[in-house]
Image (cartoon, rainbow over all chains, first blue to last red; front, side, top):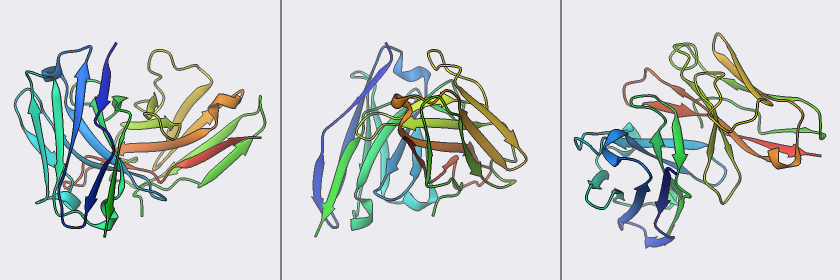
Length: 120
Length: 112
């Protein structure tokens, strides 16, 4: 079945960078966009950006412009999120998700989430 | 501050029906039918339960239904069951160019 499996918990200091992976299985990676969202304690979900694994194109939410990078290793069916210049406000669970159908703004399935803790 | 407004919590007894509202604007919910709902049991992957306002993915029971009026979408859970206790998030496509989708702040559903 279609599945997204993410890497484990990360702990970083303020100002550092973090790279989270999302391994896809059960479908052709290049056929669907992968989106990234995050969920901070006491907050709602926040859409961060998408990558087209087939062509490498990306789009990011304005809040993350300049410090986010999304990349793909198609040979391993893995998508990566890198976030730089971490602040305490970046402490959250980060999720990858596949678009339900090409260019449709709903997401299915989701990865299990990766907790990123930023400390001083 | 989330772009879409949901009640923080809703509760009901087993077998009852509950409705969660999701209020937005003409730039998101009011713009198109690209409204989705997600169920999230903390510690697990969120699950898509409705897309395009009222469509259920395969495997989602028909106890879950959705509707939309102008700038407000609603999720109704009929015949509430213990396993429905979770957080629920609405989302919508947005015409704001710096974004793609916006989410609600989430609603905690408690089964009494």
